[in-house]
Image 1 (cartoon, rainbow, N blue to C red):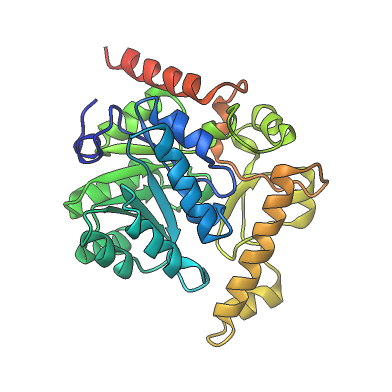
Image 2: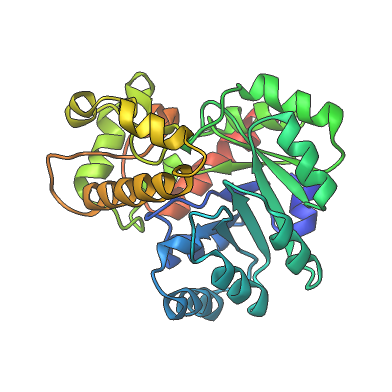
Length: 320
C-alpha cells in the first residue's frame, strides 16, 4: 500500500482521517495514528492557543506517529495567524489548508520542512496552489461531508492528475475498501476519510448524532448554504427540512455586496458554527448534523481502531 503520500509522511496505509469541525479530538487522533493511518484536526476545535498547544502535546505524549492540523486560511478566521505560528513553532508534520489563499502558510511551513496539503475543488485552484509550492492537493469531491465540491471523484481525480504534478489526495465518498481501491486506481495517492469515524466510541458527539448516522442513509444527505455561506452537507432531519437549504434573500444580497461580504460571511459562519455545536453535543430539536453520503455504510458504533481494521481488511481483500 505504498504511495507517494505514505512515503512522504512515513505511514503504513494511504489514509488520512479527515479533520472534522467539532468532532476530531485527541483520542480519535491517537487511535487513528496507532492504526497505521494518519489524521488531522481543525485548529478551530480549540478556542485558545493554550488549548491548541495542549492538544498537540497530549497527542505527542501518546504516540510518535505523524499528524496534521487543518487551518481555515481566509480572512473570516481571525485566529488564523496565531494558529499558523503555533503549528510552525511546534513543528506539526503537515498542515491542511481550507477556504482561502494558502500562500503565507506554504511559505512559513516550507522554511521548517512542514508539508502543506491544500483543499481544492477544481483544476484552476489546484494549479494555483501547486504554483505556490503546495506538497499535495486534497481533491474535495461532490460526495464529501462538510464543505463538498461539485465534481465526482471519477471526473476530478483524472483531471487533476493530467494537469498537475504534485500528489492528489481524494476526499469524499470513501467508506469501504472497495471505494478506497477505486480512488487509488483513479490516480489518487491517498484518501481523506471523515464521516465513518464520527460513529466511533472515541468521537465526542452525542448518542443522538451517532444513532442518526446509522438510521439515515445517503439519500438523506442534503446541501445547505444557511450555515456557513458555502454549501455544507448535512443530514436532512425534520429541522433541516423546516429551516430550508438556501440562504435568504437578504443574506444572499449581503454575501454578494463588495463592502459587506467579509462581515456577513463571518456572521453567517459564527451563527452556523454555534448551531452545529449545539446539535452535536446536546439534545435539541434544532438537529443540524454534518455528514456525507458515506453514512450509507455505517451500521454500528465501534472503537475507531476497529473501523480502521475493517477498512484496511476490505481493501486487502479486493486487491487479492
